[in-house]
Amino acid sequence: GIPYDVLIKEYNSSYSSARAALLDAWEDFRMRRKWFVDDFCQPTYEVWLAEAVALGRVNAPGFLPIPLSVPHGAGRGGSVPSKEALTR
Image (tube, rainbow, N blue to C red):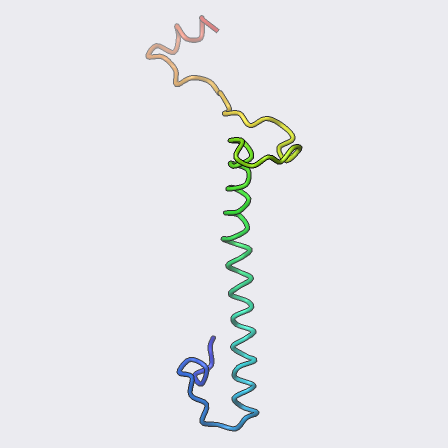
């Protein structure tokens, strides 16, 4: 967590302890920044870029090796399964 001195921005202790508190806070900030980038910014950017390339807004030849398509599976089915089995 964030040291109390850093949280309230009041350094009434020695230079060494204030510096140690700032360095401790800096490690916490770096950890939180890495988490935010890795878990939010990077996935958001990747989805945005893939969509922009797929829609033709960004020209990136070779970015999408296969064309994007919506998978078409089996339909929802009919009301009489026995008749449906006969038509396949």
